[in-house]
Image 1 (cartoon, rainbow, N blue to C red):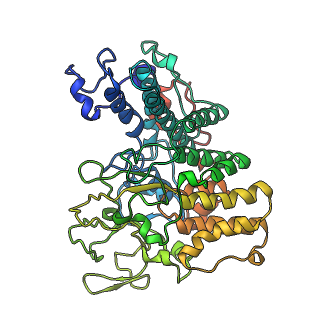
Image 2 (image 1 turned 180 degrees about the vertical axis):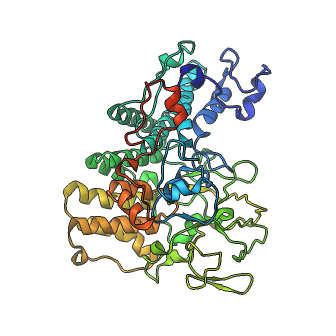
Image 3 (image 1 turned 90 degrees about the horizontal axis):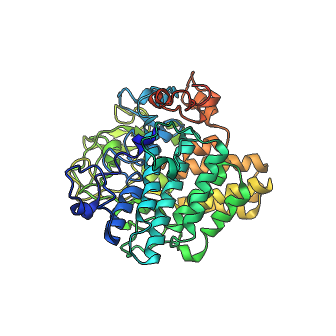
Length: 493
């Protein structure tokens, strides 16, 4: 990353404030004329802080395409499969990560957005506006920096992060090195801890600010960072913080209702990408449903790609309510009964991870159903694991927390007498989280934390190339080339 590059395009998406730009260079911000007032500052912050965290057609870190972190991550695990033959799928599915693997290195480009947020903090500091508004905007930017830093750290290991001083001297041709692991963790932690001092715990569904960053989001990412670093005491504090009544989180009673248009902004959601058909369209059903799968809305596009392998499908209890939306058998519009015994080309590689409900107004691939990133069930099951790892003992509270999702699924609840020690319980946590969060982007990180990622790639992906160093992705080759020896590749690649 060269500083003269990161100072480039902030974004042409400046919302309504684009009318303030008088220059014909529409993709460049002139700080002499923009931002000038609170409205400008709010638009600039929205552009800088929120653009990376979208599920918008084929763009954004959470796109449901092969560019999105959640889809890519789960496709490398035992619960992800794809029936398409595009050239980018084999490296993901077969665990053959290289510096030139299509798609896998793409998220590294979002590193520049951290610099945009740093510059935006500086650009709004002297803009006249109420102090509480400015503090909130800065907190949103710091939350965005910390969250994006965590996502990239989890994917690639430490990344390059330029300081404000370096960004303010763009003509100096200096290559910024990757941070050390300690520096990377400190950077993420500091930004998020500063953010939670200001951000509201949560926004009500009726609040026009719903969808902006909250203290609940920041604490969730902090919890995940501390779990990544095995700092169990800190992780526990974050999880218990999120259980306080001021956050208002609680489980939705029926699993299938979490992901529907009718239940958007429900109490289980910690943060979701706000989707609509005018510009931020989620496309989940188009990527999952086969042409013969019956839907109420006949206008939904159905490409029939993503699947959950049969091996993982068979880990579910047959009475599990979650199988209502993880479909292993159905009668098609052609009158044929499709299942594992008669898959045709529809269920050849596994069950359909339908999960999300229909958009009744959808025409084609678009959907206005919000795409969920984090939800409260993640916190409860994470705390279950954290308690046991911290104390190296299984407690009744840990068992009860894990049982929350089993109770909703309508399956047998664990008794303490059924738990055969710490490792047995952790194995149960890993399995149950997989059954709860398929295609929500948690499986890769869970498997790595449990020391199973490489093992499962060999067992379930039948990978002959899986190796220990693949718990992080390779830095893209063009970044290494431009790094002139200062930017060092991850070990093993």
